[in-house]
Image (cartoon, rainbow, N blue to C red):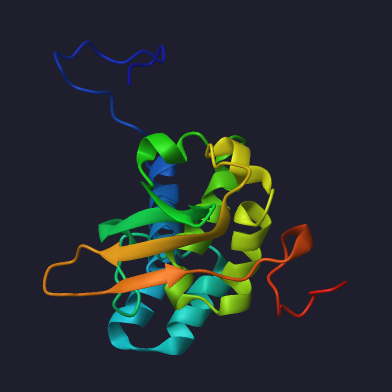
Length: 192
């Protein structure tokens, strides 16, 4: 730097920064490394089998472990076919759940996502969890009847899940008995 505070003209070179600005660089790098390590805790816990690492990572809420595109006890939801099955006057109707059909569900993403997650992971979730979500949305005369163009007379609504994973053969049917008010028959809160 020249006496008047200006930098000399140099071609293609950046001016030198004073050493006092570099003192924070070490701290910044240290913080970045700590955040990186924290962010990898759950993954490290899964790879090493250390439940404590997974727990700390999950509790921090700074260590995501996306399992959306993974195998959950032999069920790969992203590699499955979902079919909506229902009866009208004793005749079975089957409709493939496609992106176009799913797009008919109204409301914000989180509303649709709750139903999608509960139904797609249903075979691996505790029955009271997926049954309550299923019956609330797809029980008799519930919200999704109109949104999915289900006939009012549709009964015995169920979802069939067929795996498309190579070297696997699996079919699951989610078919709860839905009572009134969108509750599964036999659920803890049935009849209330």
